[in-house]
Image (cartoon, rainbow, N blue to C red; front, top):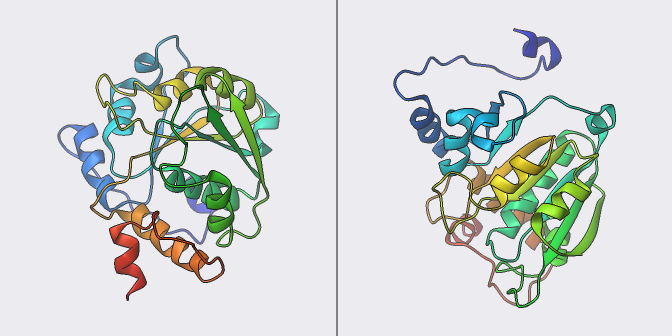
Length: 242
């Protein structure tokens, strides 16, 4: 297998799935830190571009789903990780942590675009974005992060800042799952040409990525004193007492 030669230290297991593939992958995502699927190429419609399996999995998986697409520009191979935070979606901390982890694994920088719109609620249902970056960044000291505040539509932000990115990370819109990807996920997949990671909304049930994020934040707590505990989830509280 070619991947074994590229990453000899990585253990790879093959699994044959039966029945509905999308349902099987969604079930497996409950214990996975990430699901990676390929695309069928570019098209005017996201459904055609991704195929029904990738579209269904990214809309309902319990862990982040990364849709990999062929690079159009050589610069994108070494470009930054672009994280776009929308004020209407919760889960800013989870989205940022996924971006930081990707940046560390790919030895690149992370660019955070915080969207702002007139009359929109504060982006951090989870707190101030810059503070969250500082917290989580303790776990990823090699990653350089830059912040951009963008006043405008998510689509224009994605089109403007993703041209040289190798990966775009967005939160899945918690308000609707059908038709698949009505929110930021659909926008990112339809208006960018690089790989896209879609991070699910926070849930009470811990998944593989939940455990990773919880312990990353606990490590950050040892360095940064918090004035309150608004951003702690039940999982973090449980992990902190162990």
